[in-house]
Image 1 (spheres, rainbow, N blue to C red):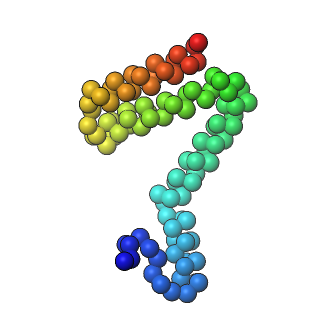
Image 2 (cartoon, rainbow, N blue to C red):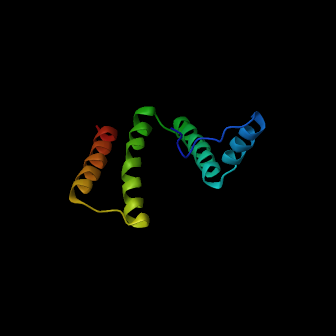
Length: 98
């Protein structure tokens, strides 16, 4: 069984061309750039704040993804998701303040 995303059988040159085309795909390249920028920002945050203060804010990323998904992608907005969002934010505040 061959999956649709697998590379076609061929020589080494065909595989190298396929990998290079994937590497320079705009979506994949933008993901690499975003991850690089995020790591630079994280490194800068670690030099400015204590880890016990900075790290809890990493838990806010699911909340940001939820809000962007609702606003940009028109995803469903349910009460369960809002309760989860509020719990994440309250947990982050409790971790930083206490």
